[in-house]
Length: 122
Image 1 (cartoon, helix red, strand yellow):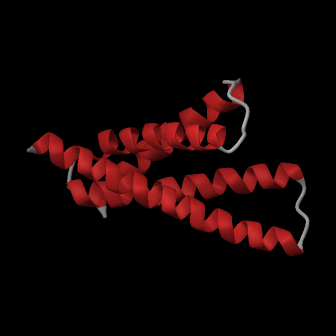
Image 2: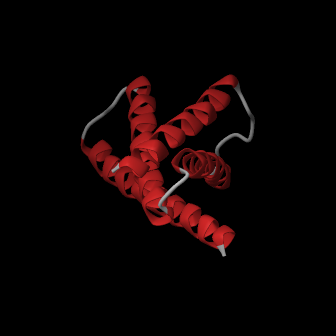
Image 3: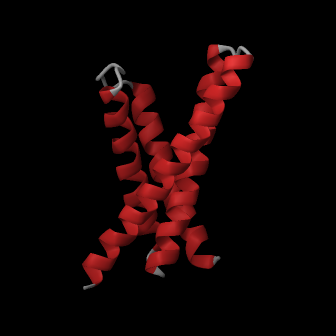
């Protein structure tokens, strides 16, 4: 029963994170129709959007589970990055792993772990 609750919590956090990412990205796309952003700024904005969405999803998952915040956070961060990677490939992104991809993966794990610790203590 504990494993079932663990995976339900991770799935709930992943859904929260993906919904937040898609919602804020849709808002950003409407804003970009009226103003022009440099490419470098867009990459920074995307990292901030992903980080905040992961924070929201991880806190939701940890609040649902109630303990083991950093483990839940690492799990949500890992699955969140893998999900975004495959969604990107599905929509035409290049399917190659570069140093930048490994940095983003490590950042997702780090943010997930710290968000999990934060979620337990809220």
